[in-house]
Amino acid sequence: MTATVKATVTVMLKTGVLDPQGEAVKSALGALGFDGVSGVRQGKVIELDLAAGTTEAEVTAMCEKLLANTVIESYRVEMGA
Amino acid sequence: MKAAVLVFPGSNCDRDLAVAFRAAGFDTTMVWHKDGALPEGVDIVGVPGGFSYGDYLRCGAIAAQSPVMRAVADHAARGGPVLGICNGFQVLCETRLLPGALMRNSGLKFVCKMQQLRVVTAESPFTAGYAAGQDITLPIAHHDGNYVADAETLAMLRGEDRIALRYLGNPNGSVGDIAGVLSANRRVLGLMPHPERVVDPAQGGTDGVALFRALAEGLVAA
Image 1 (cartoon, chains in turn yellow, purple):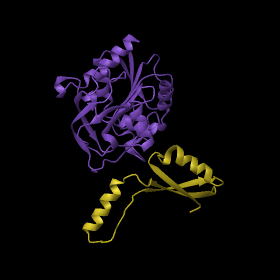
Image 2 (cartoon, rainbow over the protein chains, first blue to last red; image 1 turned 135 degrees about the vertical axis):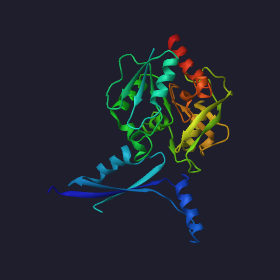
Image 3 (cartoon, each protein chain N blue to C red; image 1 turned 45 degrees about the vertical axis):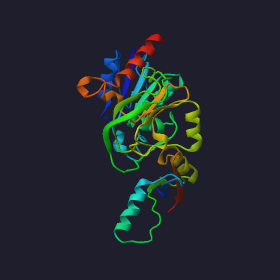
Image 4 (tube, rainbow over the protein chains, first blue to last red; image 1 turned 180 degrees about the horizontal axis):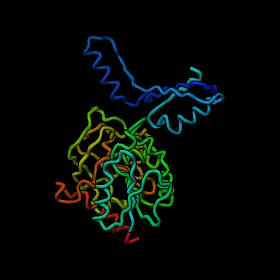
């Protein structure tokens, strides 16, 4: 079996960009009686199985080119997670 | 006069757009997303509405990486006109042929209705058939039409008169009520409303006719 390395990419809307889905989740939590939820932001987690030796820089390039739209989204890369 | 209409898996306004181009006098060819080149002598490219690739990852994100979009980017770089409607607007933003991005509607609901709009500028091959300040009615049908751009980009769009259309009564939360924007050379237009759905009285409206007619007349003149 070929050795692989895992990477986890977390994509979130940038701070300051209104997140209508997060707002809807927040109000639904309030409706369920969960008081004190002052903010909800919804994003996505992308798990990658990569060839051994793939660098964080390569994963960053994937984020810049496809996985995130940097006009509205920020991303975080964790290698080997 | 030749038009090309792109077809992605999940496009669903491609044939409507072809009908509108043909009615305006364009010899119109459908182009599959895997084609790496546009047909010889294409004057204008239409990127249609729909749900390309099921809106996976982000609306338009996967379509933006398709072989045909590289050909469209080359066409645009040569000054060729490109019209992106609804999902086509999302694709053009994802390819960075247009600035900004389209997010989930602020009300979270899919919005499908006739929408009043104001033509902001007539200075483009797409809007030359309208008067600046003219109010028109076009259908909208989208879930992710909430136009977002940073303050710097918005100032640039305003300063360069690149906002083509604004909503009268904002249906989706778009910043500045923006419904359509032009590229720096004014030859690429992206808009959420569907002019191709109102080109015949049988469709319940004809406010889209002037857009396709202006394109045809502009290309004949050129």
